[in-house]
Length: 341
Ligand code: KG4
Ligand code: ZN
Image 1 (cartoon, rainbow, N blue to C red):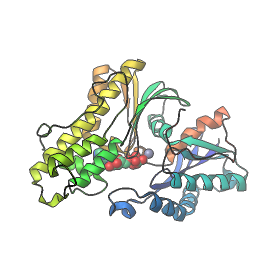
Image 2: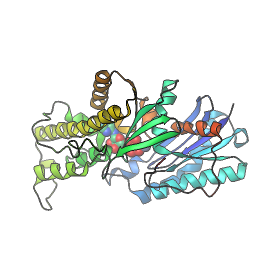
Image 3: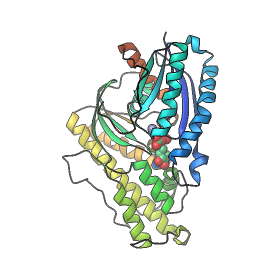
């Protein structure tokens, strides 16, 4: 048995978990910062890093205590060191390096997006590779060819906003609050998705598997409030307009996600699809993924919600690196942007 402490601080959740090399999760602690960012309508990087500094050690202590272990029982310490907000990543990486040095443990750097897809492997309890991987969260919308747990090739991603970010920003324009994803999904129920014409950028270009969601925000803004620098008074909007716009935006986002995933399945010929990230909480998205899976007769893997949103248990992908002897030195750096893997 090998026990690994995993640390996650890529965005606005401070998390730690203790996992076994048979992928048993002994503890998983997540401290969210939602309340700190609510009034700004989005994650403020500087506030996020300061909050990580305050929380990281108590969260690690709690994860060890809940698992009933001490540092002396561990075989390695793993940390998501890319991609994410630079200041947030640094806090987790420094904590992991300090523990590795102090307790003489090997250090394992993991990729946060690979971990999101690996959550499907953990939840399924069996092999899910090779598969097409799709991560859809507040910070990322990325498609991968995943030949094995440590063999990922990016096929495409967003060239501007992430899908979750588009949900959040449009929800904010519609006066629906933060985080906007769940609120926009609720508002969309009963709305007419065809009332407002909305763009589906890059959909006609089958040569690339990228997304672009920033124009959607502009389109919503112009159609509801006019061009230029309009006064965004959401309280003046008719509830029917809000419902119809919410439904339209949701379908536009999902059309893009499903359309490019369809291309990724065709291009790879893979018969498994693993999806992760906070947007997978969306019922309409799940329904459309299920339709796609039925159409292509493929296996669809979506982890339970607690493993979809940011958490450290999905850092159990470190087990694969542990067994492959892939350890990192103490000069491991953060990688804020997307990497070739
Ligand atoms: O994976 P996650 O917890 O954090 C990162 O961004 O890494 O994802 C959060 C994102 C937010 O943008 C949130 O609005 C979105 O997931 N989200 C949803 C829903 N629940 C959460 N988007 C659409 N529909 C939902 N029901
Ligand atoms: Zn994430």
